[in-house]
Image (tube, rainbow, N blue to C red):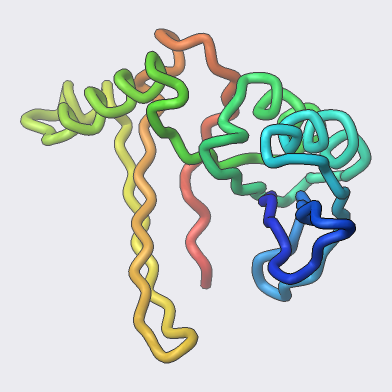
Length: 158
């Protein structure tokens, strides 16, 4: 899920801004809607895009603008999973996640069991460059944060 302002596409001097649900592997746009401005993306996502999609068996990714409790709840209601970027626009969540991953240098089996820390790394060569991706997860914060979750281990591609 992402929004983009289209370069060179303006109507009467106004920018054209779209928010879209796109399949990663094919680049296919599943649905999109025009919004007046970037800050209107959240409402478009919650009221016009997510409620009409069956998300079972999918993982929807969001940038920090969409890291919202309401959006996470909608994805789970549509039987999907999500990855959301956490930045300082959610200060309590950001601080909790930052502290949790700083503490993840596991010392013993009790800490290992508490943090249930998982890591997945992926390399991809596209557009003439090698890109490295790293995902880290822990469900240790689930009981401490008021955030909707359906924790699951990373599914590794075969």
